[in-house]
Length: 251
Ligand code: 13P
Image (cartoon, rainbow, N blue to C red; front, side, top):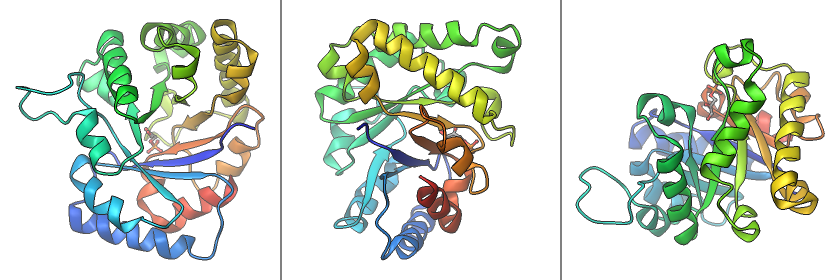
């Protein structure tokens, strides 16, 4: 059975104090519940070390939202995968569409980041997804396949086994325009088929594929009811502890 997961991506929100308050609230919400899935929060770098201590002994796991494409050295302002790991974080989001779009992270850069994350004991949550024009042109499957081939399919099967995929149609992120359950299921099944063609059925069956894009407390259960949707990568709704807890319970 592959891992089910609900992961929150805080993006560039919350000061350190606000982040601490949110984690406290989330811990309160989850008290006494045994989630049936892996629960992850991805926070800005500056929160990681503090949050890592706060979640010790809880079911919450920690992710960074990004890491550098270089191992160490004179790269002012960057944060390496080794540094992320040293905070206690276990996961790292890589390839979010906002990184691709605003910071021009291409397939090669993302391939480096994945390699460095894995080499430093971090499990990548790797994001893929098409923009609106690509869906309208009916090339969304090819776009997602290219993203997989461009940054991940150089990995060995063993390495690929450490990857969580997140399908995030860019037109659904922060727009309130959620993919329909049918659109999500169709793409997730396509992604699993593509992984199977490269790594075989067993690896594909074991790959966790999350859906992201305006997933919220109201629509999560229906999205998660699809056989190939293993959970969600949640933006806005992860900033409200009760909503995030409801989404976790829906998984
Ligand atoms: P929203 O849930 O705010 O649409 O963001 C999704 C996302 O980008 C998660 O990584």
